[in-house]
Image 1 (cartoon, rainbow, N blue to C red):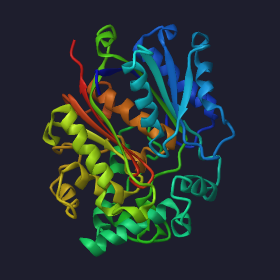
Image 2 (cartoon, rainbow, N blue to C red):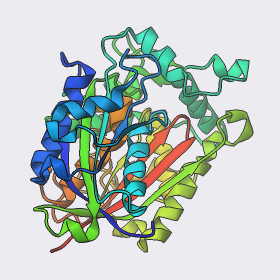
Image 3 (cartoon, rainbow, N blue to C red):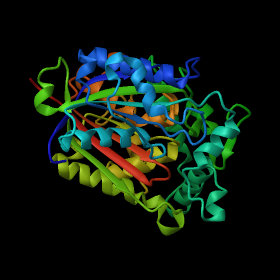
Image 4 (cartoon, one colour):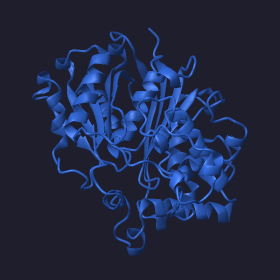
Length: 390
């Protein structure tokens, strides 16, 4: 980043099985973000929408739905960003780039997805579109199967990760109980999450139902502006770093288990921010499947490779630990409306850093970490955000 950008407002619908259509969710999140920032909508210079879609809805020109939020947004340039499950972060980076280029001073970013009106089979097929389509073996894999492959490979290379994965599920569902925006408010015991049963069947061996994120509707929004302009707003948090690392799409060309793209993104983000992992107060990370959160512990440097379970055993990643992870409930329990996920992570990190996180608030949080991933560790975005003092 050549100049510093700040978040000065956020909006967030409830996640879940919603009656609202895509437009209504976009409008709700956009209006809340503008209201929270206490900004005149006429001051918005550009709008960006994170929206994966992949055939899940018929709103093909969804970026222009943001204009429905306020009459003042008419004629404001709008565009859609798509980068699989990291579409929301892609939209944020587009907004950052617009400000840094001098083309805009203040932008509105919205992430949204409508998923629950489609069957599980339809959604599975749509999400699989983020995989490599020019290899018959990879094309045949659903995303649960992709991460099932990762869990089996982890067992072969290191040790069986299933108990650690169950603990992650239990942790994130417990965290979601305090987040009114989360899709699922239901706790699981370790026994329920670790055992295969009629209520917890294997989805893609060895992944169980409790290892998989939720198909969800929802939207989130943030207002971005220059660090200097942020001083005029009631709340602000600035980016210390915002990094994107993209890897090969074919899994056959890389060691997926090594999580090389996320690993590099974390290292670059820490270097750019000039901080260490020990300085960070909380993290929101991409737990599309519990094995992904386990691999993320290792990629961010919490543990050595193959030892991610230690972050659970020593309490590091739990509420009250040295680095609580996914206090929102994560994708696992908060939900995963694909285009909204990256924006949601940043919106909730902003609320943590400005003391607006309610029951999931980390006391005196001043530095937060966000990791949003598109596909099977293909598009990797890491942001480090800090409280901006007046």
